[in-house]
Image 1 (cartoon, rainbow, N blue to C red):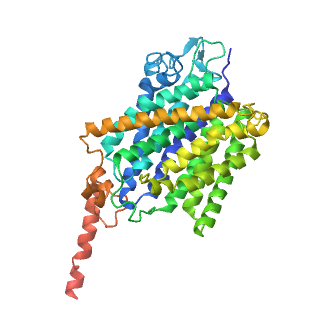
Image 2 (image 1 turned 135 degrees about the horizontal axis):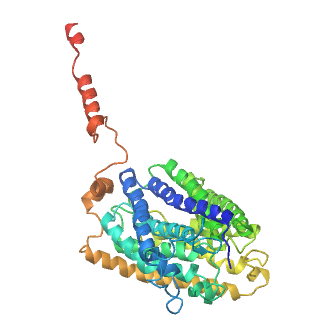
Length: 459
């Protein structure tokens, strides 16, 4: 029987905070990449996912994802942990209290940790529809998508059958036995293909691709990328579910794969465009993080370097596909997360090292194609399920909004921040928009400057 471990619990509490911090990091990363008239809306789309998905997770999301399987490894029980029942009341014995455990940590810590995964997966999708999707339509889409797509897929990938067989989990984890340590399928392929489907349904931005739509603040982009890299240690090393050797192994792989990916993206830019850019460095960082997510427990550090570099080159080349095929993926969610997620998941079948914690041999280590086909089937299953369901959900939301899922042309030209939130990120006037004492003070200052003083008149 598992026993409570305070060290594991402390690490998982820290990891939960790190992964939650990734969503504000994503808000900065995405916010810097859009035009100045859209930055608040872009950040709100990420932050609103925290509020919405967090509530749904407690109500029924955790139960659907990690409840006992109700048939075929496809879905957990809706009612088993509804409202987290049975997980938040301890058993009192004298002066001690014993909480329900998940392994060596309190079950509620695991609940919180997995909630942060659900939150950021939904937030990732928003980058594909920057500048143009109605905020209300986004919230409705996000709630339905989390319920119908993310929660079931999380069950497939992350819900492992208990050692005593008392809890039965999802089919990808237990029947297919594809390796996805921290979410290459459930998070990145899932969000990436959903971003593609949603971008197609919402349509292109006004003027794209004729008009340049450059990032308005690369400082924010770099800051966001740094925060994502920092938080990703909770994402990957936290998925070891304890302060142990696997956490150390995955942490090192997360570092080196990301370093290699950043350098590889810069090399591609230098060869293709003649310049290595800060946006390229930030994009390479994210591509490497995405690719190493499913594979960090199964490849050696040298394998991680190779995998990160290969995936980054593929992503750097893939971001241009939107121009060839005519879909407006505003912030390259498809090119980075879908392509990076597929690359990181499938390359496990080639680079898996039997000396790693996953203890599986890939094609390059004498394991043949056995693990490779498992990885490919897992990736394809999530891609098809998420892609098809997202199209249907987006069409339903569009119907609910009577076809007006996006803001009108005038509002888009003026800026979605003004039309959807009645705010602007950068106010260059001295007192516009100020209220209360601040507004009165600013108005008084303006009046004093405008009116000549008595001393000035007498002179």
